[in-house]
Length: 419
Ligand code: AMP
Ligand code: GLY
View 1: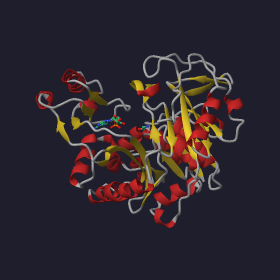
View 2 (view 1 turned 90 degrees about the vertical axis):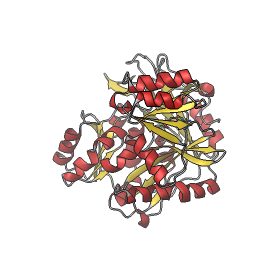
View 3 (view 1 turned 30 degrees about the horizontal axis):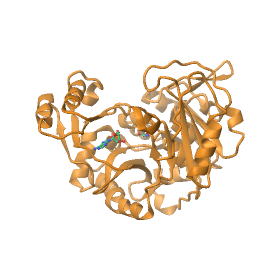
View 4 (view 1 turned 135 degrees about the vertical axis):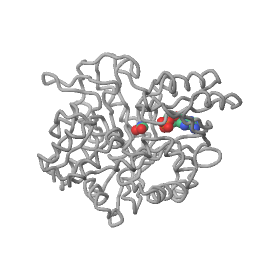
């Protein structure tokens, strides 16, 4: 089988690695891929949001399955465009990807179907939003409706910050049209956990749990980033909690999407918070998380390609999905300055040395091949994943590997997996 992976970050490198282990897969292409993916797949210079380009490539190269990994092409309808040409695609159609593409849609879905989430109001007018927050206590959470590279959520600590957030989203259009409407919601507290689930619309099978570290610096200080590291399993997600989530959140969400005529096929990501009043949904994503994938997929025992085909053909109920009884930790090494301004083009050394250990994989996120050398080409550069018998062992080995790798101004957190 020939597979085309759309995307070019650490998540897509992990997907490519896992698919390359499958006996069902003969050849992998990536659009556009990156310096790491290029070592196991053929990278083609088509951007991840170029729907016509991807459809044309898949048609001309008789691709058997196109895996659309990032949120933006899914929300734009890449899967619909591929299917319209009779091509097989993995990922939700546009009508279902809206669960991530519009926070107004997802909040209304949860309210309508009694899926636990933070209380909220929607505003399409900034003066009404400003009036609403006047007698609300802080912190309060302000969210742009649309996709905003993970930066569209502001936890306002004061009325003044809330006002600024509302004005910058709705008046200054900081996130463009994504801020035409906003959600203002109650601030919840508690530990967070990410659960990704395979679903074909009939059956939903959660993967092993994970937790992300979003802030740039140790101790959850600094700005929010795309994710500075992850670990799996979560330390709080017990089998009892998993049962409750299945009954109150996962199955109800799948069924709600069916009832709305928006059957979801692909990977549904549940961003959850364990509040004093039970587990609540903080957000949905319509895809694998990045860098959650870098700790979840290495723990998958069942043939990944087999699962993807079962979902596309709506027979997920027929297969059993097995996981290794271990743990995984991913430490992201970023460019100095990230998530703000940073330089690119620095040579990265030590990756081969770090990968000599069987339990270490280095997933490339922002790298490129230049004159035969791997150089930095993005904010999050690589994710160093270690597997181990338990979290403590995996943490120790991940950091041992990180110390072998270097590039100018490299920055990483030293507390991934600890909290
Ligand atoms: P989101 O992009 O919706 O996942 O939000 C990003 C992060 O903001 C989440 O991972 C939470 O840490 C935080 N967050 C979002 N909504 C809330 C909320 N209602 N209360 C507290 N924290 C929140
Ligand atoms: N790591 C969070 C996300 O993928 O949205």
